[in-house]
Image (cartoon, rainbow, N blue to C red; front, side, top):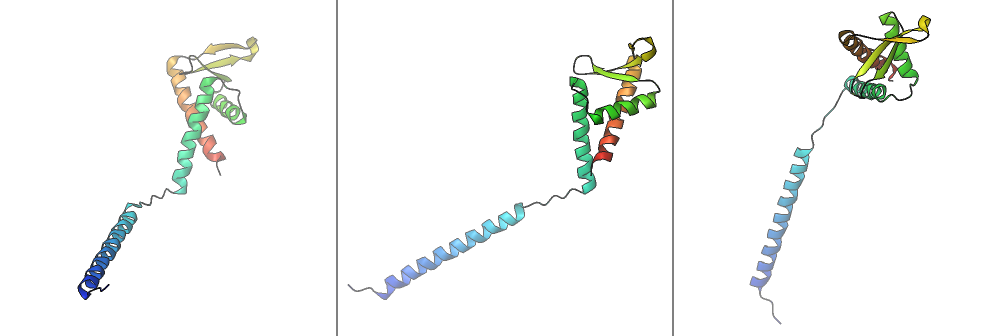
Length: 139
């Protein structure tokens, strides 16, 4: 069997074309991968604030659900009561709104519900206190 030069040249030409196509395609894929890699960096302070917001929301949800109070929740209530000037109790009316009541220890533990406007102010302050306590407790 005789192989002529023309056939060998054609085979080599085709082989080189395939090699060129492969290298060109691999370069394009590599270039696309490099372009698609976005680097986002968040500062430590921003991460801490985001985490504080998430934890604050979780603690607020615990107040709404009526879960057992942990040390942090009790510290928040104590600070809120101290700022308000009277001992306060927090409960939920329908697991959507917080209701604040003044505890009268001298009258056998009777409670007095705050007005809606006052309740809203105390709720905002509870959120602010919770945020500051959580932020201070984060490392």
